[in-house]
Structures are given as C-alpha cells and as structure tokens.
Length: 138
Image (cartoon, rainbow, N blue to C red; front, side, top):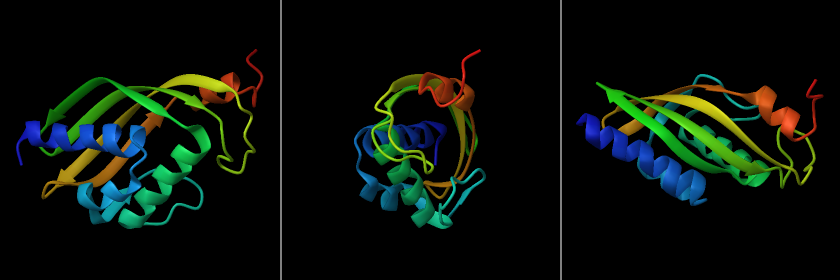
C-alpha cells in the first residue's frame, strides 16, 4: 500500500471509529492479530482488543479527536492529536465526573497488508487527570 493509502486508513480510524463511534468498522481496518503495545486494563489481544479499547474510550470519555499532524513513511503512520473529552462514563474503573478535558497525544501505527497491525502511543495523562480533578494540579 502507498503512504497516502496508509494515511487514509488511519484517518478513517479516527474519523469513523473514534469520532463516529462506529466500532464495527475496526473489522475492516485492523488485522486479526493486531498488537497493542500499551493496552488498557482489561483490553484483550488482537482485533477484539482494539474494539475493547475503542469501547472503553468512547463510553468513558466521549472523545473528539482532532488530527493536528499526520506523517507517514513506509509502513508507519504517526498522528499528533488533541482530544477534547467529557468523562461521561466509568473509565479505567473511575466513576464519571462529568468534567471535560483537553489533552494531547501521539500515536504510531504500523500497517501491514492495508490494515492496522501495531500501535504505540504517548498521552498526556497527567493533564487529563488534573483537568478531571482526579489529581491535584499543583
């Protein structure tokens, strides 16, 4: 697949799956043996694990991702994003606070055969937790 095709597939993940709340599309986008390098607690392995992750994020944080940068080379796509979210459901065992937050992150995807195959990320969790008033801000 071309670099542009890989970028388009990753865009679909953010726009249709995360922002569009269409978990069923994961079947089209991710490999059966998808590998998550930083799974959420309780997240299974493989494609089903990615569905778990999406469900936890969507139900717990009601996220809206904006893709600030999308960069690709070879089989890798990197996205620098900003997430505007509301803690509307239980997330990672934490009952909903109803508070909103805005935080940044970077995702790196490896694609194989036109599907998401691996994922790594760095997320500003400290900022998120402080904005949700789950940690002190000073």
